[in-house]
Image (cartoon, rainbow over all chains, first blue to last red):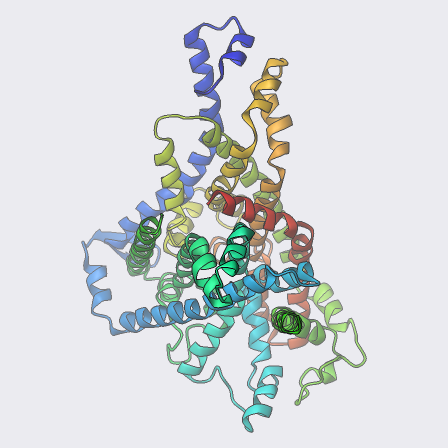
Length: 305
Length: 276
């Protein structure tokens, strides 16, 4: 399978066993560094985290085995349920806004429009902006005393609003900023998918008298469905696990109104130094990740024609 | 006919608005960075700096630790890019070209590691770095960044290697080229668009990351830009002019890299989408 007859013959002299060894040695040598890196930096730590989550800890010291006590403590902590609710709100609303926005932009960018390349470049720009920078710049735009957007909002509303000052306002604002930060990659993926839809399908649809909406529903939508599911999986995981944007912009406040599970893992582990409990919550978060991925993947597989 | 041009006009108008929304914050950052001290806290705000001045940028470059963070980010991003690409291309090639037992299990395992939220394994990585003596070092950060990018690179590049016709490689073997030489001189070159689109993804990831460098470093001499910007606030108090100047300097290289490589990114994603 690896080598056709011709190259094997060209190499001549090698006996079959030597050839077999050589054929196995190359891929093994090529794969080994990747496997080693991933094993040390991703696989080992997850086992270590599982182990931490079932031990008592004090600062960085790991103490006695305590079974599931960390998990039980989390389950009885109302703050954790509030954080979970915040995570779901953050994820669901961000998704609900990003999907139509990115798909709409992709459809527009797929039309023959003057300056299309420039529009595409500009529209993807937020992708290169780090979550830290996003948080700092939007924080400045929305600064309650001097912010440029605060001023524009004041013109619209008639009075000055500090959007980040209330828990609900901060959550809504954060979702808006997250939409700004995360739509570009989704737009690119949708655009890539749209460009693979054969033009003939649209022509056939318009011959059949389909309206613009009809051709979207019957031609575009089925063709980009797999991409949409991939985008939904990636964004869901991104939002559930997002820490930096929230941590830098609001720190989880005000009044824990924007504190998600992921932010709490960071705070438990590196601010309160409850690393056992933090690890347990990290495991819960991982389980939620896996659960969502499996559900979506099932949908993806089920949708295959 | 008229309806069509109206639709086209509407499309352009929406795209213009979306573009403005996309770059508006960066423009405001630029405007703030160039403002003289007296205008920074004007309310209502002055939209343009009058007159523009490089004073804030000069202060950041001469009086803050930002140049050090910048150097650190360049070093760590550069090394992580080289190492993750070296590891990723070889592994992707092996998986694309060879059928061996456990191949699909390996692919699934690699994909599964991207389901592990980074935040869940930060403490173990912190322990690991302390135990191995790599806490607060470039090496420790480079290893973690490289390893985290390898699975994505493998998935991306596998498709590109599969699209390189096998005949071309086999022809090279017949011409007496060794397998290794054929890989380095022919196959890698043909997978160039994939490698470049992988490169921009790694650059953006490492340059922009906050959590790893936040966890694995403690001193200015090893910390990267994101944490540098974050601590800027606490170290110097909020000086909006300087903070936006620092932000602008941190943003510039990745914007340049993006402009240079973005065409390949789109190509790379398209190639992936075609394969589905």
